[in-house]
Image (cartoon, rainbow, N blue to C red):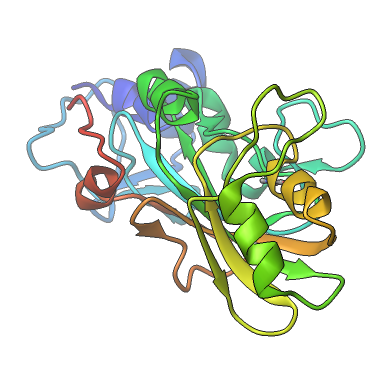
Length: 238
Ligand code: URA
């Protein structure tokens, strides 16, 4: 593959922009300055890439990533009142057609997945995909076993024809519980907790299926491995 094409695939812009990066002496491959924007690269052993002095983590095609979303960011390319979650990712991702898998509310923190693979984004956001999403809820009022049971039995929300039930609920302490849901309705957890007579003060997504946020620091992102994708029941088309 020619160098400019490789840079394009890594999100550094169009052919002209990538050519200019090389001609400006800003591209290093395996620590060596690259001079020829059309030089051929052996993609069976891709070189370590540095652009403008910054090492660039090579992105697989398509790519899959996890962000630890902080509060105060909208899950939207065109945010209305806050910053966009996309502003937490390197600008190169904007050139790769990355989309978020579903949405988290502005004040919700925790795991948010993104991908340039439309099939992945679609299949995980689809109402037919039953991947449980696990949230940690901090409630305003003391939690009770009766409330946990109500969430498990199902609560009827406005505009819904059938009750929605949590697939698992674990009380952690007086004000915190973990709950899993398989649907992704608008403000679903907050509305379910409200319908059961309490109120969500803070909401944090811990994981999806077997995939956990773990100790990824808030505001940071990382690529997902193939074995993590397998935890979501997905095999990437590579
Ligand atoms: N449920 C909510 O109420 N908010 C979220 O952000 C996610 C699930």
